[in-house]
Amino acid sequence: MEKIWAIVAAAGVGQRMMNASKGTKKQFIRLKGKELLVYSLEVFQKMDRIEGIVLVTGKEDVSFCESLVETYQLSKVAKVLVGGARRQESVFIGLSSLPKDCSAVVIHDGARPFVTEEDVSKTIDEALLCGGAILAVPVTDTIKVVGQDRKIEQTPQRSSLWAAQTPQTFRYPDILEGHRHAVVMGDFRCTDDAQIMEKYMDGTVRVVQGSEENLKITTPTDLLIAQRILEEREKKQAE
Image 1 (cartoon, helix red, strand yellow):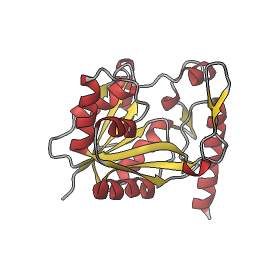
Image 2: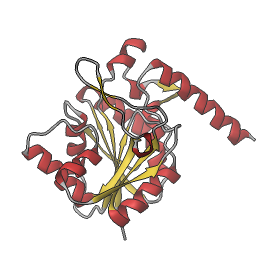
Image 3: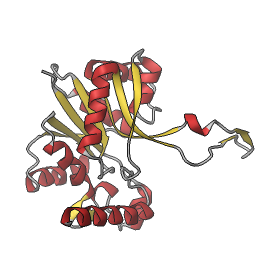
Image 4: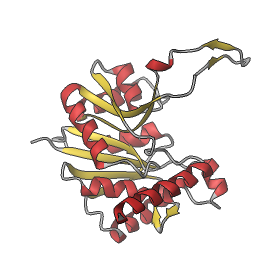
């Protein structure tokens, strides 16, 4: 039987949102009476396929996160760990803490509160087949590659461009080994875990189409969109 764990990365500061929210980190902003981080944790809590959750956060936030785990009865959160200075370091800390018999790991950003159980399961299914899978959405804007002098150097074909989201799911031994290679090389510049697989491992990572609702809360405008998403979901549940 496959043993699948989730890592939720919630150690980021999010300075733009901190400035707008009077010092509250974006993952701890309350929306409809609940912290953003809790929304994503509850998704993994409900999933029968997820055996356990590791939450990685800032040193100063460990006690608060432990109180959230208790308040919302998130019994699958097995560990609340202190993360690193960068997201990549925090994920590696989480990966290094997982049991050796873990077969696959779902890595998710704590500031993406609206991922669905269905989309998480799609990434798990695909990762177990090929080695890795990430949620992503096709890019709708025309993208320009711009040089230092702001001169346009290239316009990539939009049909081949996808905007990466989380969760990103991988066979556990592969992603752990990939992160170890990055540490040995002193490479902490990877912006997501799929990039680590691209650079240091030979396994296939596929895209699974996600949803525009699975947004990452980064700016005050994102928070307004999040409010609307919640209102629409509540309306559908009431129908």
